[in-house]
Length: 331
Image (cartoon, rainbow, N blue to C red):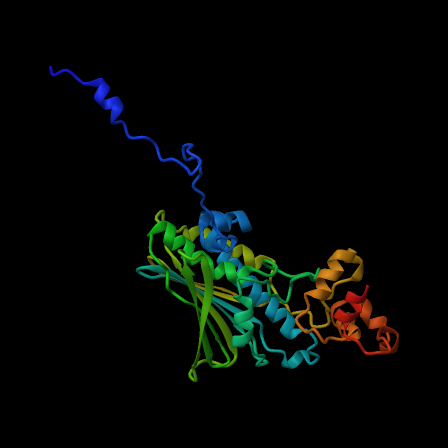
């Protein structure tokens, strides 16, 4: 065995890199992630919403149903002629396609109310802000308050990335008033930015008396429990007998479940909040978060609070006619 020259190795040993002061390098390697990326990762979604991967399909379905019911109850409020009130209907279609699960929730819109505009959708899917008709308003409603639509858009991407390691490009589709809005999620993982790209397309063949939202979900590796989804839908109708439901489910076989509307929607009920529900800071959040910066104090109080029905306009407004935000900021 040849003799090893230890003196030679010691003399030619490579020294560790030196800093300018001559000491070994001790700097750490840092990694960062913007909080907005939590929208598009399973871990981030669970941390933000508490929704686990196995429950995401049910969450999407429930939020779409909740939004449809909230719309119907608002639309029928104030209708006086009970003989001409159209039926309140919701139809759910769940199809297992080769590469994804297709969920469509369609609700009636017999009074022709405009539901969405492109400007509204751009505000809803702005990941730098919250935009909602429910936010900061403590009244009876369903669903998540202010961020559910973003979650519905992002969950399919997160599932596809986790399950198949692919960039999900299927759009969320909203069809209303003979117009389709295709909402696609654009994710830049390098620069850690996300935004929604919204395309508006006229669809003259669409029915004008219905509104529908379509979501396409990546199918999990452990497959879907259609029995669980079916029981969820059946249970959902139990507490909403004032709405007619039709469920069309296509898995291995096709079947349809019908639950007719057995009682009318209460049209005289006013779903307003009360000033007694608010702390001072919560009231400030409501006022400073209003979309209309020029709204008068009288209009805000009259529209949002049940106590507003007893307030006269001359007692509510200031002499200089300042909007409610200006009045609040002065204090």
